[in-house]
Length: 183
Image 1 (spheres, one colour):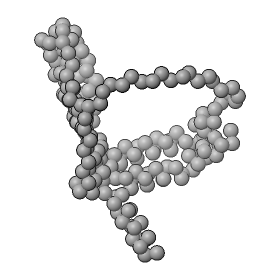
Image 2 (cartoon, one colour):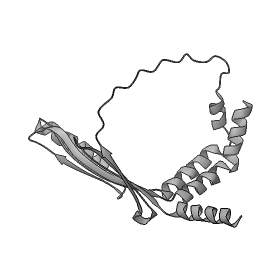
Image 3 (tube, helix red, strand yellow):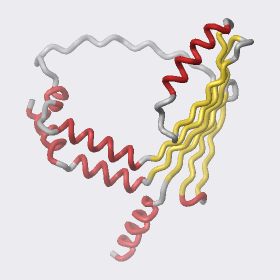
Image 4 (cartoon, helix red, strand yellow):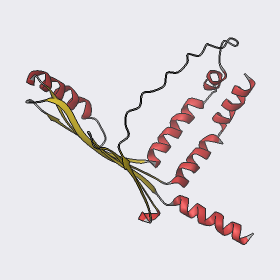
């Protein structure tokens, strides 16, 4: 009994330690992913370049005949479900720390077109949060696109589990599941 309780406490404490998943990529060099946990004691790196493989074509499904409104759609119309989902998304985004830094050099061949594209992209990237940094460099001489990106996602597995359970066991999602099962 005490051993089982000790294992549960140890697993709970380990799940409370933040987990960081980082990546870096450069044009033509591939992708490297790094997972760091337990304050660096568990450090796993995966890197390499995978060859492009064409996707297999999917067979077109024939639409099912029957009820006019699918079960999932009827569950969406549960009262207070959309505000609960919005709260859940807001809490999850607060629980996850995202950092991204990307650098791209863009050239269209014609300096006027490159300048126009650079102006549009600069206006679109201006309202991004400080944790996301995009460095756009116009190339007025050469045509092409090169770049690199690195980023990380940091979160506590225990906090994500707690927020997910808090959402799943609240009233609106449970009512939506019951409504979908009855439909």
